[in-house]
Image (cartoon, rainbow, N blue to C red; front, side, top):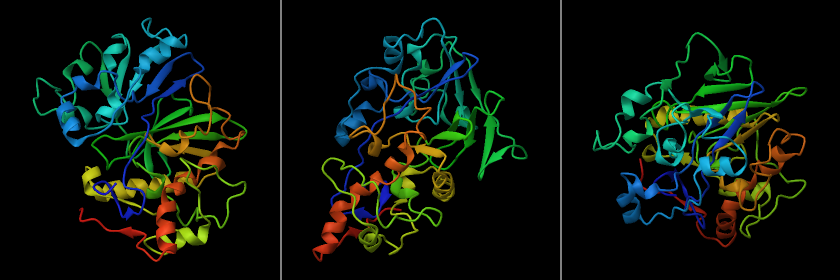
Length: 339
């Protein structure tokens, strides 16, 4: 965790997580994807040698296109109108070439100037030139005097309030999040967080959503870890607070740390709303064990099923080791020397 998030908590020294891709099916029969996760042939990427040197463990069974085809989606026939990329990083880009040229790419403001052309035209690029060949790529232009949702500039993608793109900079140039309406009466939404944050402890707790004194019903164990009572967690919080987040993002995980901090604060404002389910692109807390039914099942009824309340505090299981260290008279966390 150290180079990316601070402080270093006892017993939690690694970032581990999935890579999510979201399928949004509009009533007009226009279907889009938000992010493409990791391509199966990730060893074809320019950064492959670096990952081997770092000893990163990356496991991909299938490309997103293959998963869709196995579930009856006519990918080759153009059933996916567009792929929206939260940002340029390899674990979100997937392999656009597994989709036909009729499937457009949609990126955030400044993306193309900052990150194209791809490799090999630009030997320093982390992207492949083939990612963009043979298809239209367009940038979203947010109107700074127009629509805002929360603190973020927003773009009504379909023009009917069913799906919004949010301007959420900081992690990278042109980073965007998605906000999909999942029901009306009541209005409920899924917030697709991309890499605006990498761990729930970056934007939880807040003054709007303090650490609960108890969880009722009790949260399930994650990899054998319990979620400790609120007062014990407050003792290991760097602020000794029930309303301040547990983690800070470092500049090594940010294009602009000051802006990234501002965006993360905005995530906390959305997350405090009962009708918003905030899912980060690498949210380990909801997959092991699975906390809801994944694709091909729909998440439209997440609110009715109580998914939001069930998953909100699961990340606290990562801090059980720190609580035990504190109770044993040892340091619960340490600060690394990272910017």
